[in-house]
Structure formats: structure tokens, C-alpha cells
Length: 198
Image (cartoon, rainbow, N blue to C red; front, top):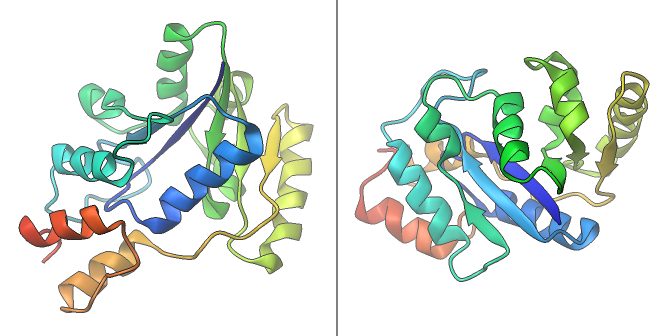
């Protein structure tokens, strides 16, 4: 099978995340995507009062009813800093005969060679990136050439995905502004009911 991992802080998951996941399902003809919220992203400080369980709940709501997407607590159960190479090793041990893809946004695609043990990531998965806009495409293509030179396989989505950031969503909530249209509606409702990010 063709399986993908899509992780990160997802704090909260938003419409840019879901659009990115759906776009790669179509481009790569994927059989399943694992949505994996990080316990603590290694490159970020903890910046909200949201529990790991609430992040999982929001991810489930964002993809509710779509069997293509499987919400995984693999990094949350492991605790500590969430390193991608460790998660790929765990998934590859469970699915040893399947092909893996790692879905990333532009920023992560441009810096992945600096991550912990990138050679393990490159051995276990094809690294997939998406430009934020048309101006980004040439930068991503140059980065893809560089990644190939150090042993990586890559796929670039040739269309920009809506630019939403979790930081912007959190800031809007804190300032009492609407997040309608930025996150899936069930996620918006969950955030309001649980008074998250205030």
C-alpha cells in the first residue's frame, strides 16, 4: 500500500492542513494517511493550554467519516520530543512491505535536512512538499535537487494550498476574532465549547 504520514503540532488543525492532506491523497494515489499530532514538536516551545487528547479530538473531528485518514496517537503515547525519524521507524516496523510518504509544508520541506537523523527519514519515506504560493515553487524545486543529492526521494505539489497558520488561528481566538472558514466547522465548535486558546 501507499501510506503517508502527516504530523506536526496541529495546534489546532486547520483548513490548510486538511487541504494539504487531501491534495496529496489525489496526487500520490494514497491508500491511507496517518494524521499524527506531536506530543511536543522538537522545534517549538509548548504554546497553548490544549492537552494532547484535545488535539487528537480536533483531528478526529476534522476528518470525521473519511476512512482514508487515520488519527494516530503514536507520538503522544511515546511522549517527549516528537522526532519524525522515530515515528517513521515505528510505522515501518508495523507496515514493513508498504511504501511511505512524508507530507510537509514549505517551511518543513526547506529545512528537513537539518532534522534529527534525516538519513533515516530519507531511507524510509519520500519527502513531499507544497509551495505556499507560486513564488515558492522554484525554491522548493532547488531544495528537491539538493535533497536528491543527499539521498532523498521527493514529490512537490505544483499548486499552492490556502495559507492558514495555527499561530494566526490562536491569535484570532485570543483577540476575540472569528476563525470561521479557517478551521473545519466541527473543530470551530469544539474550540468554542471547550474555551480553547483563550
